[in-house]
Length: 179
Image (cartoon, rainbow, N blue to C red):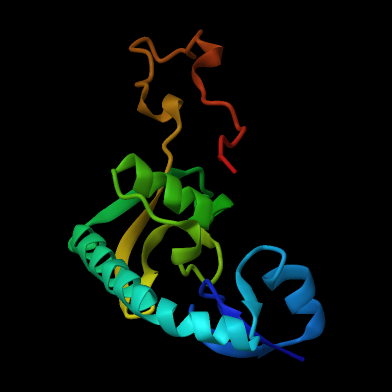
């Protein structure tokens, strides 16, 4: 185990500016090479005292930004249209990247890590999706998953009662889901 001073927040390990104990492999292969932390030497601990004031000021700014962003989510919802069976089961699923993309289309930019969807949405319905904007700021917004109506369902039957000659009017069965 190594003592590490974190320069960034690491989920499950600690917050920026804290001294933590990390397994050797994790420290050597992830934390140190990526610049997410430094060894807790006497010199680094001395420098940490000076950085704490800066870290606290940065943290206040992050909290204020998160609170401002959370106000944008009040009363907002997004709608995602997917192909579904008659029972309401989706052909595919609504995942975090799809939610982030739909939010971005509505001018609400959120990091995908902030969207705390436990499992992909697989049925038509209304879902409360939590977003963790900061450790102290969490919001929920509604995601409406609705069934995509086939293009041919909106076309009325011909007046003469015969079959329609436009065979290409039906939407293709291929799902156009972006990754």
